[in-house]
Image (cartoon, rainbow, N blue to C red):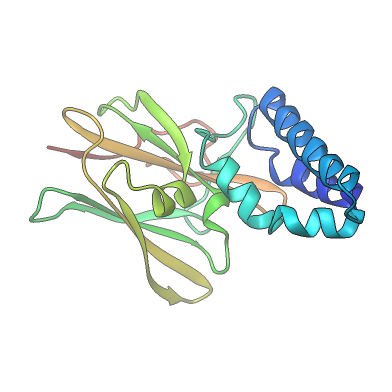
Length: 197
């Protein structure tokens, strides 16, 4: 892969992080490749030595609370994305069952964590973040596949003092969908799928 192709692909993979940060990362990898070329490597070898582009992008994305653009209009559609079940487990952790189209990348599923029943935002992240980071004592487990959909369990400790809720967002087939505990077809964001302590 050429340096140009590598940088363009990485830029495309980082579209969800802030533009200024994205430019900094692109500049960083541009300079790293140039340094290797100046040390006598071919451009292709320099790019290959940087590492797998998917792993690089994933590592960068994990550092950001990635949500959706505030001007993005999403439609509530439980046949595309849904929280099909939620309950408190015996050990006090919360279990949210999330339905997404099969083969959807976890980093494409945006999760808005809410801090109260009214649905006030605590932070945004991705389902991929929950599956990779352990700072919230959380995990994402593939549960089963049914009728063209994958079901995952998000198991986490409560992330607010009185519980937590989630809203889900997904860009799918060039449309934006959400699952926010309101009626199908709504473009008004619901309160969230809430669990209390």
